[in-house]
Length: 133
Image (cartoon, rainbow, N blue to C red; front, side):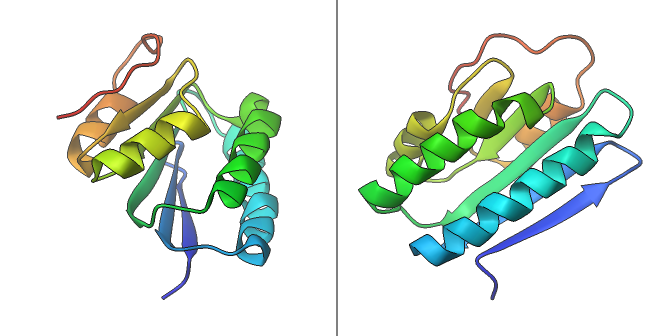
């Protein structure tokens, strides 16, 4: 199974990112390029736009990789849509996800259903916070 996958739903202007397993640096470097390309494609779609990051099968990562992910996220922040929902299942993964990014319009969820419902809401996103449902 691949370490990551992308799907763009043009009817909902929604990018879904699935992240799995434990990554090494070469895997992250490929992801870094591809996620930037996907976010650029999403930015050309009509608003409102959203990004669903399914990290339910994403392992807790090494400190070195987390630092790279934080750097990459900060570099790509202007590319992210109005709302980004991250779905994680464990407390450790939730803590690590909060370290990577919890900017305005980015929230954490424990289910795909709750994350999707939030992404499809009308209006501006609320300030970032940890939503556990």
